Length: 539
Image (cartoon, rainbow, N blue to C red):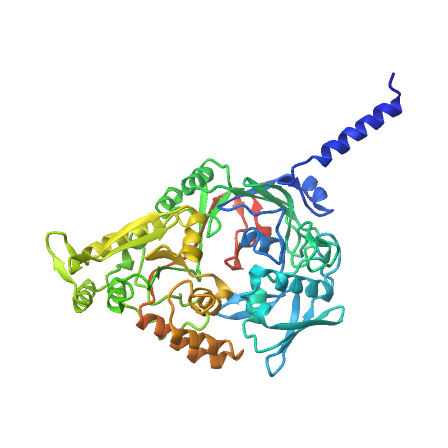
């Protein structure tokens, strides 16, 4: 017969055994206060997202998970405000030595991580050194040029570089990989190569629970320093199909969708217009859609053909006829872009045909194509619609534009992973629809990642020695006044050589239930909404 003690012991052993067998991909991984927050805040706001947040691997020093999840959990030393302007965040001030080699950051006091521990210069040193150690971060300027980090006191971190590193402040303001996390996030504590345990940041949110490929629940950080904690929890619900996101919004399965994190097809936006149950929010963006050109293609190696494609593209037809003439690769609210340094080709199909004929192509009336030696101009355009559903319509419009000037285009719609593999690795494309990055990564970081060419690492997109030299010049100074004339030359070179085909300037568009109030856009598109300010009417 079992005694009461035996029963209690048996029950305890069963509970321990079950807890030891839990699946880490469907786990509660919040900080110590998360349970309290969830108990006090049963109400949730559900947001549609295209990608899994990787909430169990959301290491601030890595690219694991999504940018908006990183920005929700971790704060930056300084915030990006647009047009190259920065403002204080965890660092309330900073100084740059005259030679541009030393950056001193003075930390804000009385800031706590989500586990209740204080933010100190130790955490900054740990976070940045851990990020520099990651192989994936090797191309970043901080990783390449950092010599050492010193912490002369509890609230000062000094970064010393081997050579001028003008992108330092901009890289530190991004959503990843240089945001600040607690040394307690890894084991052993504070080990820069330690094993990641859980996401512990100073941002407005912490990971409450995570179901791989399904959803991540973010609960409020009770110690959030910038504002009062949200009374709600956020559910980041993974919905990969664009039409399914529309349906989920209509039937109340999600409360909010849109932006790059959960794009809605443009043709479906009218479903929510003049509908009292929903509200549409729009804001400016730094993102542009454009065509990447593979200059190794026998046709695209010809500058006349590249220019003809630009002249033959009617950008006003994009987005259900809501497009407009684009003036260059970058929108006007990108740093270093001016009214005069983004020239436009415009829509001139007759000029396009003249350029094709100048390269020896002749019109075949029966085929309605331009040919040379019996060979027509045939190109393959690669797109993906998981993240960018509107690219399908854009590709079809472009395909028709090219038909009008005698160029044949085949559209290949790939799965998201295959698309990025094509862009970054196999290069098996002639043209690809792609998008510029957002915020502080523009324009230098974006241009470097796509166009900078070396013998060891060929440029992903167009390769040009003169453009390379201009990018090298930017890397040698942190003084904006000296950088501006070089960017003017960069923009002119990209246009003159027709290295890209700009097709559309994006805006940020979100749609939410009318029951959601307090909506306001964030300062960067990687953290597009001030989630902690959202309210639910009547709650």
